[in-house]
Length: 115
View 1 (cartoon, rainbow, N blue to C red):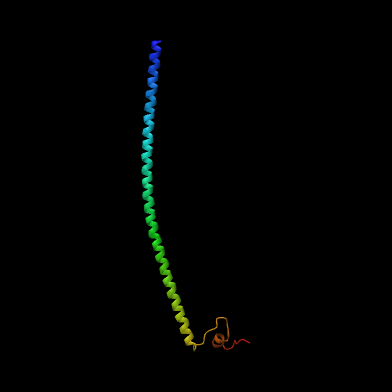
View 2 (cartoon, helix red, strand yellow):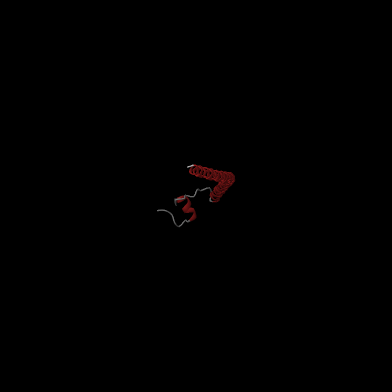
């Protein structure tokens, strides 16, 4: 029985040693995976920061473009109003009726007077 106890103890020791080595290897893999995930998280955080910065720049550009279009539209409207005023003055200050009333139509087309 001494031999069986020695073999059994020797087998148990080897099993424990193998389990300890496997556990250590598993811990090393977990640590390596954790380090890889930390690196990935850091690079993603850097990418998010870069994209936010680009988004802010794009947002400012869109707001500038919007402001420029508003200014342009205001200028065009102002010029149309000046043109309308000049046209009215050229027609002896008689307002043109946009709906075909007597004032404008009779001056532009004297043959087409309403009944």
